[in-house]
Image (cartoon, rainbow, N blue to C red; front, side, top):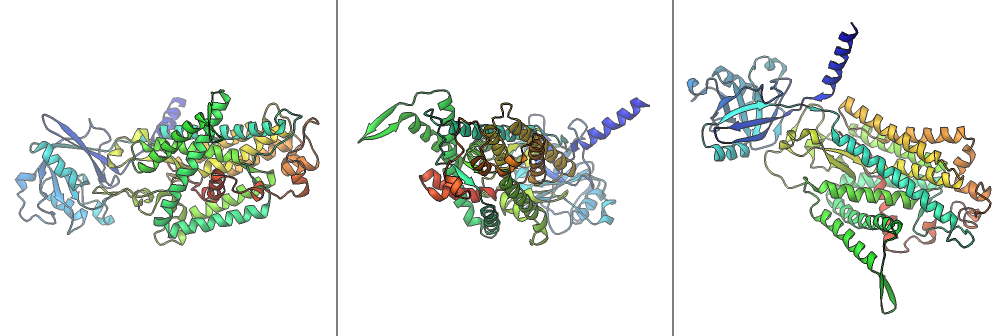
Length: 565
């Protein structure tokens, strides 16, 4: 009995873990060669074999001179027991299929010069068709004719692939490494600042760092993000190029900061020379050139699907790391306000806005994927595949992208990616960075706040992916990440009896120091006179890099907090 129960459970798990795609493979061969092409079918109407070996092979008959809306001009003996290729148009799919079936054909392929869509019909028509039906690109058939000329044999099959793709594991690893390194870097910078330069332990504030202290400023900040997102929705075709340029500049600067920090740790020689009393670092010049070249290569080849995602993820990781190190939240109160508002923002623009848009697509998805990416936004079991090569649509550089490694067969119809918004990394990452700095303030040798928040982020990501896989729909990851990280941090502070300090953060450190007596409070004198004062008000544009950060912060936060399988 137990063995039977286990077998049933394993069968259910295996069934749930498989996806039957609407895209399938057309295998054409003769005695000398073979080719594979993309086709689109309806698995609930005319299912196909899931493996190549089990698929039945049929001779292919070219009838693209007709649309096959009736039997006129067709000799049954020519098509009986064979697969037909006819043109799309004049009548619906079920009528074509019934005509082909009445002539004795075994398979119907419809060549299309327009968009390939999942074939469908009225409910009453489904039971009348008993042969496989699929759409293929007309240009693919022309290519096949040139390759094979005659004697074409075809097989149609639709391989399944597991829902839990390796790309999800890679995406989880990217997110965890970025959040952990960003939090650790922020804490290390805080420790260095607290220790000063070794001359009496004077604390020094980094002029490059941007602080958020005022709840009112956070509310205004989120309101500006909403306005920016709506602006992008209505003026996408103009704004997208502006954002791409800004991203190239900001990501090159971020990559420079990350690599330069690693070189400092490794004590790499810098070398220097002078020109008219101006000192230049050889290492910095070479590193800046390399980083600019990487950003330029991404900008030029940003629409090359096959490999450019590697550079986009590299620049994205560097950008997120530098952002978490540069932007600081002053206390847990600001963390709660910011993350809660962004959670509501994310849920509203993902789940609520589809009720107000004309095409029923959320504003967040429309902006993140671009107005031209209709196939990626198609809901339910419908699939749309372009029949002809199209000019690549511009997309915002707002997501980590990893190709689905187990879906290479379906990539005949187009590359498929798992994606994760930068906001899903940076927004919880700011809380992780605050926890890391608080560990420094209270001299926590075990880094209990930092580690617990990282674990909470990992659990939130796992839950996000689990819900996404079970529902088959992309999820606003902040819906799960924000509660996990906020609650875990609050529980740790409460259990350690440090909630008052944790809630007040920097302000508490200035007014009632909990640091080692040999250290000065953070930003002495400055915050004690005005706790809401920020370094941006003192020197907002101290350099070109600072200007980019100050300008790009609002743009970054509206970046899509939405993960997709």
